[in-house]
Image (tube, rainbow, N blue to C red):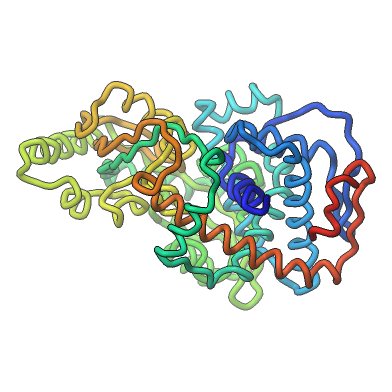
Length: 448
């Protein structure tokens, strides 16, 4: 039974982020309290629906396991407060921005996202902010407690052997996909246009126009634009070097000259600074590549693709020499799960692959290289890429041969969960826990 809980524990932490917006209608009530934190019946039901999407063969007392996990998370949050473990607001905002960019890509545009959900991006972020902050606190505490856990190959094999054969999960088809990405080189004239526009904004602000208003209407950083350009608090080293250098050269409320970074060109205003931490806002303009800039990049990638197909140049070597994508370049171009490092990804996981990749793979065979295609990155940069369809594993039951990396991760989670439970035995004495009598049959306080 403990092993089943650990598996549910793992499932909870790999759920697609788009399910955070799922809405379920239930008759709500408080089912548990941990200090000042409450857990609602709807929280348990939402988690149940999410897990059900991933695994149909669930134990009969699954709701007990899920409520237990929610209580565990609340205890982590409560202990974080007791131990003064905090998460930087800048980290919360960055995670919110990342998720909003993902949602925008799924819906096609900010306007379509807002129209479909009936809420502005700013409202969506406000609704998710506390939830994201809590998730990051939980992750930080878990990492602090379990960071030293490592498993040996023998332990991985032992873990797998102890899973009942009738409990082995059935995994969907998985693929390994590589990409060679190029960003079109933007001409100097286009960059100069962006700088001229930002200088005009600076002139207007110095004349009395509100910075927030200009940022909201003109900034191409969708996340911060919804907050009038504000980026929140950041420490040294958290932002790209050109931006950070500009911030530390400014006095409070002073506005920079246009600053170029990998994201585009910024007009920056320092709001306040405390030692090595600072709070600033900006207006971002991304200079657009001209049709000729895009064609030049396409011609370059087409020539590289020809060399790869002729086997004159290996795909991994081409990525190492020519790819502009920092996330996949160190892994020979392979798209991977950033949390696990795994390169085998469920074929329908558009969270990691992107919808464009999913649709392209439908027309390709394993071993093939796609034509050069245009796409937009998660941060809305225009780019081109060649895809390499390296492998496909058909739907199958979990096994050592095909899923070593996944089983290793599960074995690590198993050991981490055991370590966490021992930690909870001590931590629960420092917090108040109350569970609704509806869940008396779970005997959760005894198990905790």
